[in-house]
Structure formats: C-alpha cells, structure tokens
Amino acid sequence: MKTTVNIALPKGRLGEKAYALLKNAGFECPALEQPGRRLVFENPEKGVRYFWVKPSDVAIYVERGAADLGIVGKDILLEYRPDVYELLDLGMGKCRMAVAAPRGFRDATGTTLRVATKFPRIAQSHYNGKCRDIDIIKLNGSIELAPILGLSDVIVDIVETGKTLKENDLEVVETIVPISARLIANKAGYKFRGGAIDAIARGLAQQVESGL
Ligand code: PRP
Picture 1 (cartoon, rainbow, N blue to C red):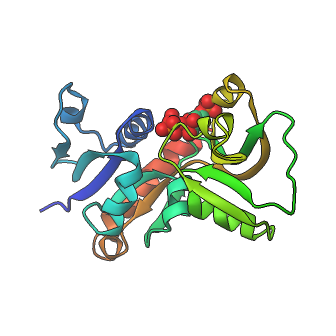
Picture 2 (cartoon, protein in one colour):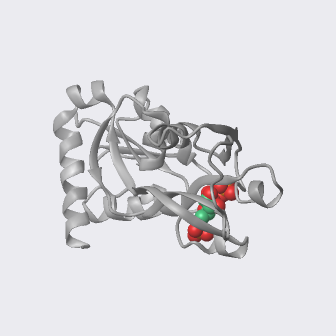
C-alpha cells in the first residue's frame, strides 16, 4: 500500500499558493479544488492527504504528528519554536518583522519602552539583544491601533506592503528579520516516511527554483 503523507495547509492565500506548487510538483488532489466547506481531502493514488488549518495552528499539528508536513510562516517558527524540521524556504509569503512607531518617534532611553505585539517572544529577544528595558503588551490583532491610542510607544509586527502603517501614520523604525513561508516536517514522521516526504520536498524545491 502507498504511504500517505498528511499535509497541513494554512487556510487562505498562502495555503492556496502552496497547494498550487504541490499540484505542479505532481501531488494534486482534485477534491480539494471543489468549492465547499470540507477540511480534509485525500488523493490515495498520489499518497497525499491535505487539510486546511488556521495558519497559526499549522506548527502545532506538525509538532504533535497530526500532520507529517506543513506550510508555515517563519514568524510562527520564531515565536513558538516548535520542535520540527524546517525543510525548505518556499520563497513566498514574503514580508518582514519590524519595529514601527508614529512618524518622528525618538526612543527616550531611561524609560521603559512599551511594545505592543502579537509576537512577544520575538519582541523580547530583539530588545534583550539591545539591553533595552521593555514592557510587552500582548495583543491579538490590529496592533497598529496601540500607539495611536497611547497604549504603547512602538509595535513589533509584520509589514508586507507597508500600507497599513502608512494609512495609520506609522513608520518602520527598524527591521528585525525577513519572513517567508517554510515547509516543516514532524520529526518522527520524517523517520518513518522519509522517502515519501523527501519526494514531496524535492518536488516543491524544483517548483521554487523554477519560479525564480
Ligand atoms: C498583518 C499585520 C499588519 C498587516 C501588514 O495583519 O499585522 O497589520 O498585515 O500588511 P501591509 O504591510 O501589507 O499593510 P493581518 O492582516 O494578519 O491582521 P491582524 O490585524 O489580525 O494582525
């Protein structure tokens, strides 16, 4: 019997782009392309089972072995540090993690800097590296609001086009790290289904290279 590889795709645009690469690499799944609300799709002939997962949950599915492979943003890997293998940079979903502040902001050292973010670990390690004392304000979205309303001095957030910052009179103060989507693998799954997993990773790598 053909080995089935379970693949967690992030729901949304990134997941759709990742599936397009997988399809071009020969791991298509016609059922997934039908409209509807199903979450699990299988193509036994190709040995793949896909499921749509909330983007920030992909790493959890892979770390715990519910999925052998997953597509996830580097931001999630840096923030949650899941115990998984990072197999490939897919070169898509490109953006950066940055510190942003109201235009003209100057950091008044000597005071504690208030930092609003969805990524407390990334923010903390960034400022630890600068020995800067900060107070983290953990939010779950619309981070740009925090400095506008005086909740924080700066934000640490994802910047893609920069449009959200611009429209809210904020600007990038410094870039922390560039971000892109990665292919990750469960460690035990890789041991037992390494051949099938490598075939998918190789197919994806070829697609990524040919797209460059
Ligand atoms: C992300 C990020 C910024 C925005 C950046 O938000 O947190 O708000 O995208 O994109 P831009 O530079 O192209 O404007 P997301 O859409 O994930 O929503 P959120 O408010 O829940 O964080």
